[in-house]
Image 1 (cartoon, rainbow, N blue to C red):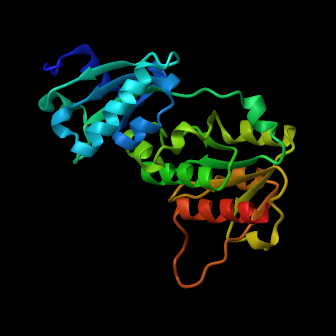
Image 2: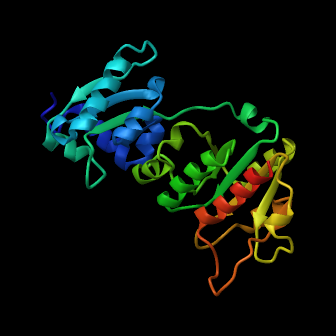
Image 3: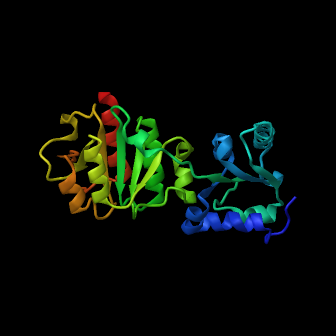
Length: 267
Protein backbone atom coordinates (compact mmCIF):
# COMPACT_ATOMS: atom_id res chain seq x y z
CA UNK A 1 0.00 0.00 0.00
CA UNK A 2 1.24 3.49 -0.88
CA UNK A 3 1.26 5.75 2.17
CA UNK A 4 3.62 8.51 1.05
CA UNK A 5 2.39 11.53 -0.91
CA UNK A 6 5.87 11.93 -2.45
CA UNK A 7 5.69 8.50 -4.09
CA UNK A 8 6.75 8.97 -7.77
CA UNK A 9 3.52 7.41 -9.03
CA UNK A 10 1.38 9.76 -6.97
CA UNK A 11 3.37 12.79 -8.13
CA UNK A 12 2.95 11.62 -11.71
CA UNK A 13 -0.84 11.48 -11.37
CA UNK A 14 -0.89 15.04 -10.00
CA UNK A 15 1.29 16.32 -12.85
CA UNK A 16 -0.91 14.69 -15.47
CA UNK A 17 -4.04 15.94 -13.73
CA UNK A 18 -2.88 19.56 -13.60
CA UNK A 19 -0.66 20.19 -16.62
CA UNK A 20 -1.57 19.93 -20.28
CA UNK A 21 2.12 19.91 -21.23
CA UNK A 22 2.66 16.78 -19.11
CA UNK A 23 -0.32 15.09 -20.76
CA UNK A 24 1.10 15.95 -24.17
CA UNK A 25 4.60 14.83 -23.19
CA UNK A 26 3.47 11.44 -21.85
CA UNK A 27 0.55 11.05 -24.24
CA UNK A 28 -1.58 10.14 -21.22
CA UNK A 29 -4.38 11.52 -19.05
CA UNK A 30 -6.05 10.88 -15.69
CA UNK A 31 -9.55 9.55 -15.13
CA UNK A 32 -11.41 9.38 -11.83
CA UNK A 33 -14.37 7.27 -10.76
CA UNK A 34 -15.70 3.75 -11.02
CA UNK A 35 -17.53 4.19 -14.35
CA UNK A 36 -14.52 5.65 -16.15
CA UNK A 37 -12.29 2.92 -14.74
CA UNK A 38 -14.61 0.11 -15.80
CA UNK A 39 -15.10 1.51 -19.31
CA UNK A 40 -11.42 2.23 -19.99
CA UNK A 41 -10.09 -0.07 -22.76
CA UNK A 42 -7.70 -2.56 -21.17
CA UNK A 43 -4.89 -1.87 -23.64
CA UNK A 44 -4.95 1.86 -22.81
CA UNK A 45 -4.75 1.48 -19.02
CA UNK A 46 -1.32 2.34 -17.61
CA UNK A 47 -1.83 2.62 -13.84
CA UNK A 48 -4.76 2.11 -11.47
CA UNK A 49 -4.85 3.51 -7.93
CA UNK A 50 -7.62 2.59 -5.52
CA UNK A 51 -8.50 3.26 -1.89
CA UNK A 52 -10.73 0.83 -0.02
CA UNK A 53 -11.61 3.47 2.59
CA UNK A 54 -13.31 5.57 -0.12
CA UNK A 55 -14.98 2.77 -2.10
CA UNK A 56 -18.59 2.05 -1.24
CA UNK A 57 -19.33 -1.63 -0.58
CA UNK A 58 -21.00 -2.14 -3.96
CA UNK A 59 -18.29 -0.20 -5.80
CA UNK A 60 -15.54 -2.14 -4.06
CA UNK A 61 -16.96 -5.38 -5.46
CA UNK A 62 -17.16 -3.87 -8.94
CA UNK A 63 -13.61 -2.50 -8.80
CA UNK A 64 -12.19 -5.76 -7.44
CA UNK A 65 -13.92 -7.79 -10.14
CA UNK A 66 -12.63 -5.46 -12.86
CA UNK A 67 -9.07 -5.58 -11.50
CA UNK A 68 -9.18 -9.38 -11.39
CA UNK A 69 -10.43 -9.40 -14.96
CA UNK A 70 -7.70 -7.02 -16.13
CA UNK A 71 -4.94 -9.02 -14.47
CA UNK A 72 -5.95 -11.98 -16.63
CA UNK A 73 -6.08 -9.86 -19.79
CA UNK A 74 -2.86 -10.39 -21.78
CA UNK A 75 -3.40 -7.07 -23.53
CA UNK A 76 -3.42 -5.12 -20.28
CA UNK A 77 -0.09 -3.82 -18.97
CA UNK A 78 -1.50 -1.73 -16.14
CA UNK A 79 0.07 -1.51 -12.67
CA UNK A 80 -2.41 -1.74 -9.77
CA UNK A 81 -1.68 0.09 -6.52
CA UNK A 82 -3.66 0.51 -3.31
CA UNK A 83 -3.21 3.79 -1.40
CA UNK A 84 -4.28 5.11 1.96
CA UNK A 85 -7.01 7.74 2.17
CA UNK A 86 -4.73 10.73 2.72
CA UNK A 87 -2.58 9.94 -0.28
CA UNK A 88 -5.57 9.20 -2.51
CA UNK A 89 -7.24 12.51 -1.68
CA UNK A 90 -4.14 14.38 -2.85
CA UNK A 91 -4.62 12.92 -6.33
CA UNK A 92 -8.33 13.75 -6.57
CA UNK A 93 -9.85 16.49 -8.65
CA UNK A 94 -13.41 15.85 -7.43
CA UNK A 95 -14.98 16.88 -4.12
CA UNK A 96 -16.58 13.46 -3.58
CA UNK A 97 -13.99 10.89 -4.72
CA UNK A 98 -15.20 7.41 -5.58
CA UNK A 99 -11.99 5.61 -4.65
CA UNK A 100 -10.35 4.80 -8.00
CA UNK A 101 -8.07 6.82 -10.28
CA UNK A 102 -6.38 5.72 -13.51
CA UNK A 103 -3.66 6.86 -15.86
CA UNK A 104 -4.77 6.13 -19.42
CA UNK A 105 -2.92 6.38 -22.73
CA UNK A 106 -4.37 8.85 -25.22
CA UNK A 107 -5.73 6.82 -28.18
CA UNK A 108 -4.17 7.31 -31.60
CA UNK A 109 -6.11 7.25 -34.86
CA UNK A 110 -5.37 6.93 -38.57
CA UNK A 111 -6.55 10.25 -39.97
CA UNK A 112 -6.79 8.95 -43.55
CA UNK A 113 -9.22 6.24 -42.48
CA UNK A 114 -11.27 8.74 -40.48
CA UNK A 115 -11.52 11.38 -43.21
CA UNK A 116 -12.09 8.86 -45.99
CA UNK A 117 -15.08 7.25 -44.29
CA UNK A 118 -18.11 7.04 -46.55
CA UNK A 119 -20.66 9.69 -45.55
CA UNK A 120 -18.54 10.64 -42.55
CA UNK A 121 -19.92 13.18 -40.08
CA UNK A 122 -17.57 15.58 -38.29
CA UNK A 123 -17.87 18.22 -35.58
CA UNK A 124 -15.23 20.95 -35.61
CA UNK A 125 -14.37 23.04 -32.56
CA UNK A 126 -12.80 26.34 -33.52
CA UNK A 127 -12.09 27.66 -30.05
CA UNK A 128 -14.61 26.07 -27.67
CA UNK A 129 -12.83 26.92 -24.43
CA UNK A 130 -15.08 25.69 -21.63
CA UNK A 131 -14.10 22.12 -20.63
CA UNK A 132 -17.67 21.31 -19.62
CA UNK A 133 -18.91 22.35 -23.05
CA UNK A 134 -16.15 20.39 -24.75
CA UNK A 135 -16.97 17.24 -22.78
CA UNK A 136 -20.66 17.63 -23.55
CA UNK A 137 -19.92 18.06 -27.26
CA UNK A 138 -17.84 14.87 -27.32
CA UNK A 139 -20.49 12.90 -25.42
CA UNK A 140 -23.27 14.19 -27.68
CA UNK A 141 -21.19 13.54 -30.79
CA UNK A 142 -20.82 9.88 -29.92
CA UNK A 143 -24.56 9.60 -29.33
CA UNK A 144 -25.32 11.27 -32.67
CA UNK A 145 -23.08 8.92 -34.64
CA UNK A 146 -20.34 11.45 -35.39
CA UNK A 147 -17.21 10.01 -37.00
CA UNK A 148 -14.76 12.31 -35.19
CA UNK A 149 -14.48 15.57 -33.30
CA UNK A 150 -11.84 17.87 -34.76
CA UNK A 151 -10.16 20.46 -32.54
CA UNK A 152 -8.49 23.56 -33.92
CA UNK A 153 -5.53 24.74 -31.84
CA UNK A 154 -6.85 27.00 -29.05
CA UNK A 155 -9.79 24.75 -28.17
CA UNK A 156 -10.13 23.34 -24.67
CA UNK A 157 -7.95 20.34 -23.83
CA UNK A 158 -10.30 17.34 -24.08
CA UNK A 159 -8.12 15.39 -21.65
CA UNK A 160 -8.33 17.72 -18.67
CA UNK A 161 -10.26 16.25 -15.72
CA UNK A 162 -13.47 18.29 -15.99
CA UNK A 163 -13.79 17.54 -19.68
CA UNK A 164 -13.09 13.84 -19.16
CA UNK A 165 -15.87 13.63 -16.57
CA UNK A 166 -18.28 15.45 -18.88
CA UNK A 167 -17.67 12.95 -21.68
CA UNK A 168 -18.96 10.11 -19.45
CA UNK A 169 -16.65 7.65 -21.20
CA UNK A 170 -17.15 8.84 -24.79
CA UNK A 171 -13.52 10.02 -24.84
CA UNK A 172 -12.50 6.34 -25.03
CA UNK A 173 -14.62 5.59 -28.06
CA UNK A 174 -14.89 8.70 -30.23
CA UNK A 175 -11.83 9.82 -32.22
CA UNK A 176 -10.57 13.30 -31.35
CA UNK A 177 -8.29 14.83 -33.99
CA UNK A 178 -6.12 17.93 -33.67
CA UNK A 179 -5.54 20.49 -36.43
CA UNK A 180 -3.01 23.30 -36.28
CA UNK A 181 -5.22 25.97 -37.84
CA UNK A 182 -8.46 26.67 -39.68
CA UNK A 183 -6.92 27.09 -43.14
CA UNK A 184 -5.17 23.72 -42.96
CA UNK A 185 -8.43 22.01 -42.07
CA UNK A 186 -10.39 23.83 -44.78
CA UNK A 187 -7.93 22.56 -47.38
CA UNK A 188 -8.19 19.01 -46.03
CA UNK A 189 -11.99 19.07 -46.04
CA UNK A 190 -12.08 20.16 -49.67
CA UNK A 191 -9.48 17.53 -50.63
CA UNK A 192 -11.56 14.80 -48.96
CA UNK A 193 -14.85 15.97 -50.47
CA UNK A 194 -16.39 16.90 -47.12
CA UNK A 195 -19.01 19.67 -47.22
CA UNK A 196 -18.62 22.00 -44.27
CA UNK A 197 -21.33 24.15 -42.70
CA UNK A 198 -20.90 27.25 -40.55
CA UNK A 199 -23.72 28.59 -38.41
CA UNK A 200 -24.33 32.30 -38.95
CA UNK A 201 -27.17 34.66 -38.03
CA UNK A 202 -26.73 36.21 -41.48
CA UNK A 203 -27.43 32.94 -43.28
CA UNK A 204 -30.58 32.64 -45.38
CA UNK A 205 -31.21 28.90 -45.03
CA UNK A 206 -32.24 27.24 -41.79
CA UNK A 207 -30.24 24.13 -40.97
CA UNK A 208 -33.53 22.22 -41.32
CA UNK A 209 -33.48 23.02 -45.06
CA UNK A 210 -30.06 21.52 -45.77
CA UNK A 211 -29.09 17.98 -46.75
CA UNK A 212 -26.58 16.42 -44.35
CA UNK A 213 -26.67 12.86 -45.67
CA UNK A 214 -23.33 13.07 -47.48
CA UNK A 215 -19.87 13.72 -46.01
CA UNK A 216 -20.58 16.59 -43.63
CA UNK A 217 -18.68 18.77 -41.15
CA UNK A 218 -20.14 21.35 -38.77
CA UNK A 219 -18.11 24.31 -37.51
CA UNK A 220 -18.76 25.44 -33.91
CA UNK A 221 -16.98 28.53 -32.61
CA UNK A 222 -15.79 30.11 -29.41
CA UNK A 223 -18.47 30.69 -26.75
CA UNK A 224 -17.95 34.48 -26.76
CA UNK A 225 -16.45 35.29 -30.17
CA UNK A 226 -18.10 32.73 -32.42
CA UNK A 227 -16.38 31.56 -35.61
CA UNK A 228 -13.44 33.30 -37.26
CA UNK A 229 -13.81 35.06 -40.59
CA UNK A 230 -11.65 32.33 -42.14
CA UNK A 231 -14.10 29.64 -41.05
CA UNK A 232 -17.18 31.61 -42.06
CA UNK A 233 -15.77 32.49 -45.48
CA UNK A 234 -14.14 29.11 -46.05
CA UNK A 235 -17.13 26.93 -45.20
CA UNK A 236 -19.10 25.60 -48.15
CA UNK A 237 -22.43 26.68 -46.73
CA UNK A 238 -23.70 29.07 -44.07
CA UNK A 239 -26.70 27.90 -42.07
CA UNK A 240 -29.07 29.55 -39.64
CA UNK A 241 -30.27 28.12 -36.33
CA UNK A 242 -33.67 29.81 -35.84
CA UNK A 243 -34.17 31.53 -32.48
CA UNK A 244 -37.03 33.29 -30.72
CA UNK A 245 -36.86 35.78 -27.87
CA UNK A 246 -34.02 38.18 -27.09
CA UNK A 247 -31.11 35.82 -26.48
CA UNK A 248 -28.15 36.70 -28.70
CA UNK A 249 -26.86 33.16 -29.13
CA UNK A 250 -27.06 29.55 -27.99
CA UNK A 251 -24.59 27.70 -25.83
CA UNK A 252 -21.89 26.13 -28.03
CA UNK A 253 -22.71 22.58 -26.92
CA UNK A 254 -26.42 23.16 -27.55
CA UNK A 255 -25.75 24.49 -31.07
CA UNK A 256 -23.51 21.53 -31.81
CA UNK A 257 -26.13 19.11 -30.51
CA UNK A 258 -28.88 20.57 -32.69
CA UNK A 259 -26.77 20.27 -35.83
CA UNK A 260 -25.49 16.77 -35.11
CA UNK A 261 -28.92 15.39 -34.29
CA UNK A 262 -30.47 16.90 -37.40
CA UNK A 263 -27.81 15.04 -39.40
CA UNK A 264 -28.64 11.85 -37.47
CA UNK A 265 -32.37 12.34 -38.12
CA UNK A 266 -31.79 12.73 -41.86
CA UNK A 267 -29.65 9.63 -41.99
